[in-house]
Length: 321
Image (cartoon, rainbow, N blue to C red; front, side, top):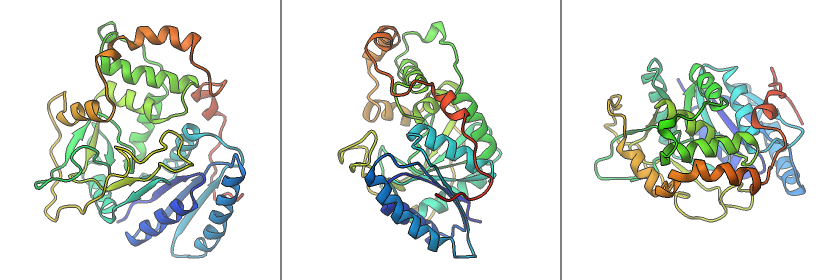
């Protein structure tokens, strides 16, 4: 059985169409599409293209197509989080894609097999399609991470409820972690996101997952290419690592890995060095941010993340613009 797919989009009509066509090719029959409200003329014109395409797409009675058009622009964090909430209010497990991604066909196979295999394993939160470190090797094997890796991912409704609760929580810093560079990197990023200084939803999730040591399954090869370096990108504007990493086919003899027993994962060390670039300087970030966040940083939103999202009501049925 092919799991339902959520597509979160804003102003990339080509990206939306590409994801729908890719999902259809892999046998997806149930679609949830969340479209953030336009904030400029370009987004309006892109969404006009989406509307025309989706009107025809909905005519296929063999498919379940649910669309949530937002009238106002919510911004990336609230748009994505509210869309995922809506999705998992209606399905028990599924795949989440954003419009700047290009999945390999085998991504859907990998996600569906893994959702089935780890459904009852409480410690596994996320099935990821992204492998940023060593995207291909002669002897590819899956690995594990304590970080979310949400460029093309899948999970279960009951586990998303836990993620959502934890990513919006306000845990107190442990005295033992005050100078821990990893904890500081994620905790301060999460605090800034939830406080309205950064418009990001994955930093609070990464902070929660790292703190609770929950697991993400990393595929044996990279199955998702992120092409989000165009004019519509929020945080990336150039084609540089880790963007645009090529994708590969899943090995024919792929086997699911066992749950790791060690607390520190080798893959995470490489992510911290090569992707997140967590260094010794982050040991003082908690102290430094006490001053910068009060006097130097500027708010993007007056209301904190939890207040901006709690006022939204997810639709029970398809909505139209």
